[in-house]
Length: 151
Ligand SMILES: [Zn+2]
Image (cartoon, rainbow, N blue to C red; front, side, top):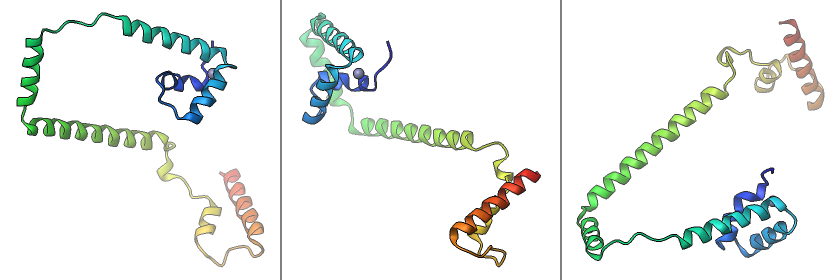
């Protein structure tokens, strides 16, 4: 069974988290898409299973002790933990940005020859062909193609 693009929104639909319009769109889609209808049935079954699962009994004394420990935690510990997590997230973001930038650059891009039409487009040299902008662009592209063909 292939994945439908609407599969991602099924849990939000089931949980009633979609807007009125999005809910109507999803309901209409569900009448036409067997894949999503089956997936929605599975999600409903999972919700029912989780709701019927027995919850562990935690004695009142244990709950009281747990709450007391959390209340006694100094605010600084929570703040420092949040700062450390934010710093780690920033490092991951920076690392991923660098990795993506490095991987997306073609090999030898730093030594790549700048195409003629880019040079002509940037510099206003007297070598520019005369004519309309469309004719100039055609000339630059022709020069660029002939240069690549000669390499
Ligand atoms: Zn679907």
